[in-house]
Amino acid sequence: MRLEGDDDDADQEDNEQDIKPQFASSKKSHFESTPANNHQTINGYAYEDELSEGEVEDDDEYELDPEDEWNLRKCSAAALDSLALHFGQVVFNLVPYIITQLSDEQPVVRQISCWTLSRFAGWAAKLDANGKSQFFEPMMDGILKRMLDKNKKVQESAASAFATVEEAADTELTPYCGIIVRQFVQCFDRYKDRNIFILYDCVQTLAEHSGPALAEPELVQLLMPALITRWQKIQDASRELFPLLECLSFVATALGPTFAAFAKPFFDRCIRIIHQNLNDSMTAAEDPLLDVPDKDFLVTSLDLLSAIIQALPEAESSALTSGSPLNMFELMAYCMKDENNDVKQSAYALLGDCAIYIFTRLRPFLPTLLEILINQLDLLQVDDDPETGYRVVNNACWSCGEIAMRAGEESMATICRSSA
Image 1 (tube, rainbow, N blue to C red):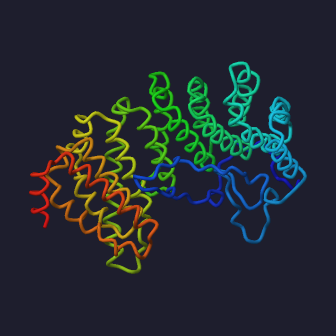
Image 2: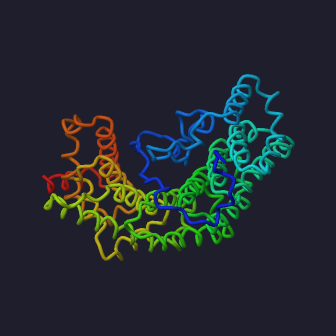
Image 3: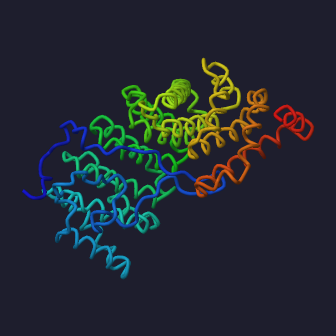
């Protein structure tokens, strides 16, 4: 009764207050390489001060969520975790037993078993063929099945655990992409709004680590309709766009030229979102009674534009930019001058990608863009927020270098004189 997690509630719609607002993930500069996902190595189910990827804190100040409290189940999981880290192989051979607990009648046992198994994923994924057959494949299969559990909290735990498995297994997951994508597609059909956010992370992590394997025609025909259905359902002002746009950026990169068949609606909508956000920002600046629009809409839209331009052949990327009713380069110029450093960082990343992949289309706008860029190189501007400020400067330097390599010395001098 205290745990409040025994009901089969997967078909019940989520209450709006149960869905925590989502924000674009923190960014690194172009020179800083880092995994796109930063899954916690110590999960909230065992340690009360940490949250698992996708686990949502209870925002109610007046009522304690029983799942946030220590209990025998969580202490047991934490103890097993410590034993495994200390003794290694001896404890790992308990994995088949833990897999059986994924079918326990109590949802809370299924929930904690998902997390416990995910802690062993790095070890199991590196075993030989026999070891994979005995440990990794049943572990992966069991967690995937629990992603379609009839209990929402079990779904959430399983999805979070599988994202951890993906991260730990890396390219070892490539042979299983078909099985994984089919399960994800079923999850898109079943999940309510709250768990959809974690599902985006699962898809994004798979795209990041499986790469071109995801571009197999059969998998594309399964995954893209599911993503497009969700894309068409979401309104432009929905915060669900943040994780979806980030997910699509990784999918576009993984699919490469194959993404061309789907690119135009995504490209055009990103341009529209950027235009609307910039207009709303200008209006809000003139009227203090109006709220400033969320800049994460700009950040995630710019990032998806970058991913599309990188993924597609030059001719098709150029066709998208020339066929858009709104000028991407003019919008990018406004973003390069935005007061938000995350927006500027993404804008300069897009500028550099345009220099690499569609320089012919970019060239006519360089005098205006380089004038903004040169002003950005003033290091006095980073004093207010050095961490994010230097990331902007790094991306500006990088994009300037990419432009210079393609413009040549004489043309660069002419462009710089024109922008002076």
